[in-house]
Image (spheres, rainbow, N blue to C red):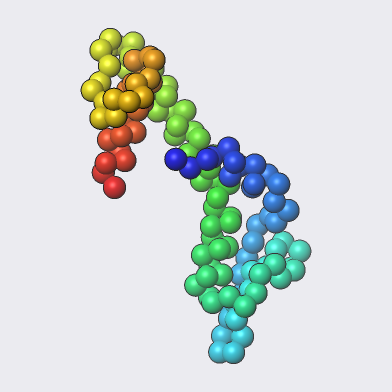
Length: 116
């Protein structure tokens, strides 16, 4: 599982804010530029610069969204457990959660993981 907290810490410590890229052409490679107009990465292909810029700019919001969705899943499973006393059948029987709500959370996580 992705360590969201660790990635958030990395984002918070980063000194780079919004990044942009300058496309390369012919003999000139692409570069990534910070808000101050300084080159922070160079000698890149256009595709790599575009990917790195998009990923770096999107990561903080994506991490927030993952955290929000995890909280929503936890809340939904807690509400479901209020109405259904029996836990679902789990594929991994080695590490059974203590509460019915946690069982439902694990159950749905397993189902989504299997759909990849």
